[in-house]
Image 1: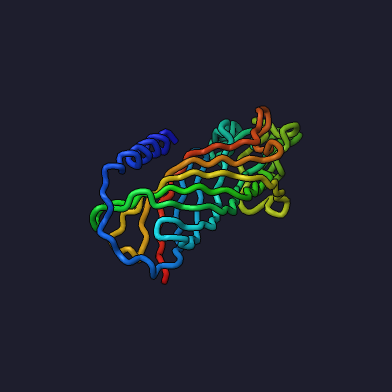
Image 2: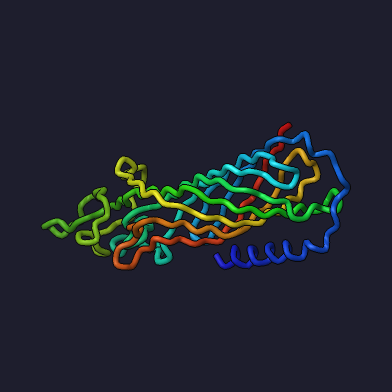
Length: 248
């Protein structure tokens, strides 16, 4: 994820250089009342999607209502292949639960620098925060055992148990939706600070790149991995690729 960090730093530096821009020609923006935009999210511990509904307060200020759905990985996650069979499926040894995070946020966005020309860039910044829900789905593995005659049993699907499942009997990760009914939810909160670079020619439509920082906080450590310390704070850098539309 080093690329995300470097791109984030580069785009944030562009926002500081935006002080050299002059205001664009004054246009009648009073007709726009709302905007809706969303897109793909890539961050330093996973990926997902984002959706935002914005309501104009003034020409340069908007009230935001946002939804993010992103995966979250533990820094110690490493995929390996079973020692039992070279044709086995990859799995993360020691992973207890897969984590999907849903963020429901409220915030404000401020237009900082308006583009000088049609092909210029609007630069805005926003602050956002709210409810963060961590959905923890147990990891299921295909497990095999050595039979009395020395042969191997057929793979059996079981929820990962670090006391019973070892590299000697794990065949690979189970496919399908196993464990979905056993999903548990841990509520928490999040804080987000971001910068948006809008580069579309048509002011009714939105094309933008957003980058920034998010921290998710939970009242207890999320049990993602065995044999290592789990966290209750999850800071990440992110990049969003956004499209959307403004409405009168």
